[in-house]
Length: 130
Image 1 (cartoon, rainbow, N blue to C red):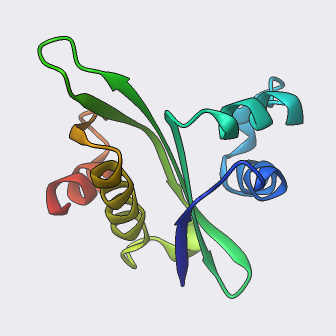
Image 2: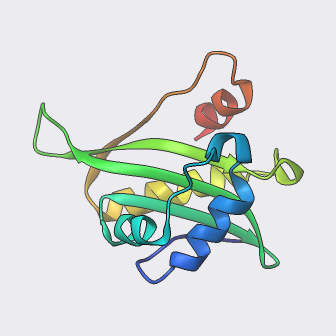
């Protein structure tokens, strides 16, 4: 299992992961084009973390870093985390969050925060553990 933050030259990996992991009904007809994704990958405030097992995309996480207004530190909002249904409950979400935490420590981020719906039990379990 490999979990890592995508870099500027990982455009094809990001595009493939979005296509394969994010359900079509969530992508809708407005899928980000390559130019948009390339711009996002070049932004050091954008975090895209991918988990791969045996060359298969199994998890994707996106987050965004922004300055805190109450002090001189940065915070990260964990925006999206998706794990292929066939690989859920195997610690993949936790591994991606751990990778995000590692990246945040390197970037002097003081806090990671996340929101989820009250009925999303899987997300609440993952966020409680990490």
